Length: 215
Image 1 (cartoon, one colour):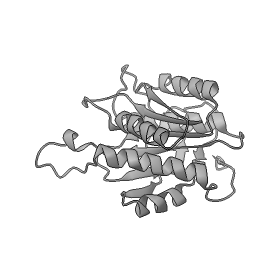
Image 2 (spheres, one colour):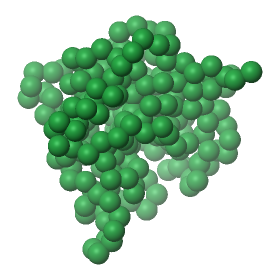
Image 3 (cartoon, one colour):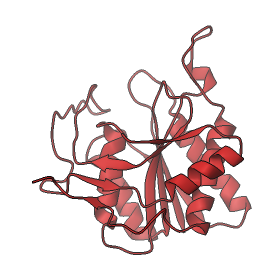
């Protein structure tokens, strides 16, 4: 079982490409015989994590790939690290704006993705899709969900999970703007590449997904 997630629109955007791409990737993967579910998450601190973790508990997926929007980036960003920090530049969709709060009180400082991100990057490049390994998922709801997911799966062998950020859709960028964008089909194909890699390849190397708090 594969679980894909994207977010509802937030801020001043009327569409969130992460949800559209997750739906399209679901259809691509289903056409290849994979069992896949897609879930739209609210862009709300706390609530988003609850919705995701309830789905993980119900579906017991082998692969979980969450996606979110990182407007201004020009490629599929494979996030390496989720940090235990909520620090919002803008309010979420319910007006919450946490500042320097822990996602999980007393939890580890950070978690690594358990997706084979370097193998996935290589496969993105082979497929002609722009990609990168990103060292920061930010501190907004995307990172909140990423951290909550990895914390819930910590110590559970056999489940590969992580997060990708996606660019704007071309239609979200004003005419004449130099802001980067990516077609929906490329985003969806990129998600499908990452999922196939997670299904077929081992993680990049043996390690504990937790990053210890420095002492």
